[in-house]
Length: 340
Ligand code: A3P
Image 1: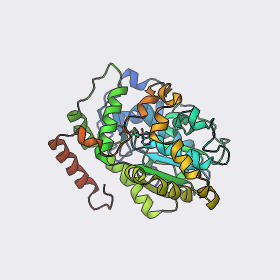
Image 2: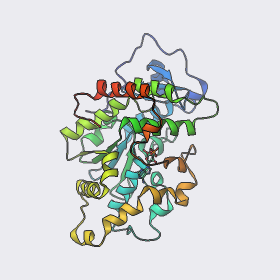
Image 3: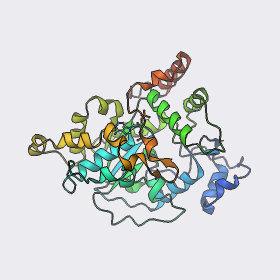
Image 4: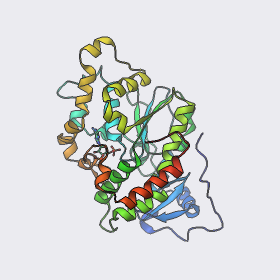
């Protein structure tokens, strides 16, 4: 499925009365006009979110996505790492960077780029980085190949240039219980002082309605889940929990899928183990590059590394909250074949 022109709920008869000043700053005329007619919802770390192509975003993100949809030209050997925020994106970016570049940078070398830079600097996002710079169209035609990109937007909003190409897309998905906890704690850390922090009950209420940035989680997950069934050579669907359970096995699957399989010499020389070690939570969390610095001048790098565990949700959910989210998962994902 390709990007559609606006959203399913385009209601011209009831425009939003006006945009907040801070929302319309640096937005193109086209984007401001569009926002006037999109469904609007109270935000979380932004004053408002708008529903664009069935997903909630703050205004700046919508502008970046429109620019990306209009201008990005895919190459057949591009690699795209897709996810909902807080699903293990940083880890997957590091693993893929290390796999694909292992002939340029040995995973055991002391000055490997992943020991010096945050994974998001090495593998930037379309909608935050390349196309997130105030309406400027980036020249990314001559990035080293294969180009590796990150994105948090759903499959159905990717431009035709990608969906009709031979690009490899790898999606990482996470159990909604752990995903919610990681997301809620992260957003409350980065929320501007002008906006209230959300209690876990309020946050879960919004998450369960799908009203969070890049939500609803079920729409997002299912967009890639379904494509991974239709186009298994182009879309690989991974789960964070599976990677945590057997990273060695999944590293080989990923390398094979990308067309960079490990040969027997590499296997016997411990290359796979070196990559796993280089990208391990314990190693990455302790690096200076990840303890200091910021992503997008808003998100401190250290906030991308919290616990890195499966099942931490039990420390944050009451029985009522557990029941509520279980019901949403059953209602929205039941029958899809996607389960946790
Ligand atoms: P927790 O908040 O549960 O600890 P994202 O990279 O998509 O923002 O996801 C962040 C989540 O992945 C956080 O989960 C973070 O701790 C975890 N994470 C970060 N780096 C990791 C790594 N190298 N291995 C495993 N998990 C990692």
